[in-house]
Image (tube, rainbow, N blue to C red; front, side, top):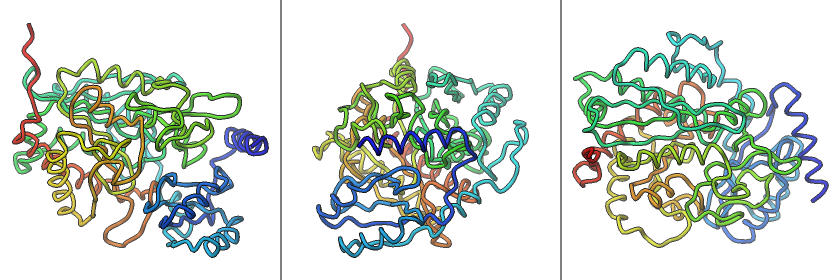
Length: 430
């Protein structure tokens, strides 16, 4: 264990001082976990930069996980495949090639140059949001909190009928490496503001919903993925002497446990739940902001990638929530509309049975703390036209089609939610 922590320290110092970490000839394999022995073997792998790295941690038999294998570990991994009779598929032959494609051009910083042909810095995104507030009467710049490194979490409130529209809260890119989430969210914001009468479904939800949208929550982590280590997931708070960050989607006050179901108690792990519930300033301040709106909110959505799913409560138990039938219907109509656009196939259902067991997630917290529907989207992780799989490293040409299908799903979901009585106007001020 001491040697492992020393290795983490050396890698951490190297990442801080060096050029961005490169993943030349790193391969990504999709592993189907068929039994508990295979699960134990995968859990026993040493993980981190220069070592194996799971895109999602192995949690149960029957789960599929993506595993990054460095070239120096290739022979060892092939021996593991034989020893454990692992069922694997090569998903990404060279991870660095995909990362290189994420930056196809020099992105301008001016708000008027903002586009969806590449991935922008947090500063550029927030400048663009400010330009929207300066341009549109219905847009207000909002602050959802702060980060451990002193940055602000900036979003927009879009409300064309103040005092009348039901509220929908969207948080995106809480996991730092999931770049397509924030870029797709900014595209959706733009479309809500520019939809015409020729797009009646989009125009309807733009006119008749009070939107609170935060495209980029984990600002510190996102900038770290851009400058140092592309696959960083956590926040950037200091944990102990050598470890950095907490998984911000394991840190919410929804059946939180330190090292509980679907999380880790090891502060160096990517799913570390934190030393205490809401230990992270990002999750505490954003949750406080959401609670300040609780009388105005009807829905809470969390945007992630890249498992192609919509998830509902719970993550910690197989017990069904009382509204399960309604939530299944909402997810079903959303997925049908999403698939109709570009043919991307999503699955849906309660988190614990659809993806893996987990605690401390934001969408479960919204249902638990505010009593409103909380859903987690896992965006596309492959190109439906070519079959290419890219997981978190989506090429920029996937931003717009992903955003289009997600927006279609929102139109369908909120249309059905209105019929089921889940969209409610804010209370009349006394």
